[in-house]
Structure formats: structure tokens, C-alpha cells
Image (cartoon, rainbow, N blue to C red; front, side, top):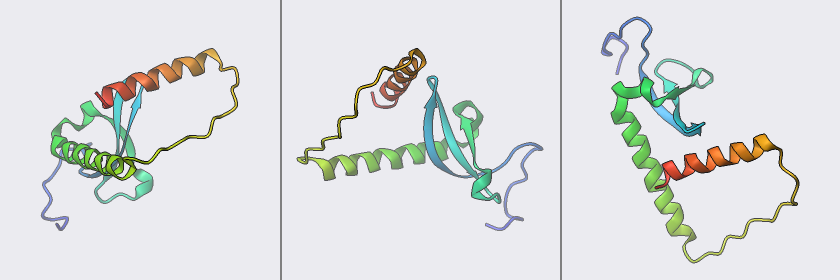
Length: 111
């Protein structure tokens, strides 16, 4: 699509090219957005509420991630994966809190 074919966006709005990644910070989902006409270095993490108008792109990203997880699960089925056991160290209170937040976020992502 040429620059002339693109719809004119209101001042301060940019066109989403694609979603690169997803993360959860303090229970809030954010997506790493690649903007049309901008280099990779200009990608930004955006909360879901900023992306309401491009829900089709978000849905396509989520579907792609779901298919990739299913494929990975299928490839690893029957294989026993053993992670190396790290040495135990005392964690600081904020590290425990961060682990709880990450675990909560993972539960929300993987019902």
C-alpha cells in the first residue's frame, strides 16, 4: 500500500504495522507495536486500551501465539524436559512480590 493509499489519521495517531511481543506488567497486558513507516528502534510497548481500534491485529497476534504454543507443545510431547536446578539463595521481599505478580499474570494469560 502506498503512502497515498493509506487513510489520513488524526493528529497524534499512528498506524500499526504489527505486534511483535506481549508482556504483563503488574497485571496489565502490553503489546510491543511496530509502527508503519518507523524503524524497529521506534517500537513501543502499548497498553491494550490504546489499541482498541486495531483489535483485529491484536486478535491475529494472539491466534498466532496460540498456534505456536500448540506446535511447541506437540513437539515436546513425550519428551521430558528437565531444567537445571539453580542454587538456592535468599530472595529479597521485592523479588517475592515480583514472582507473585508474574505468576498472576501467567494465570490470566493461560487460563
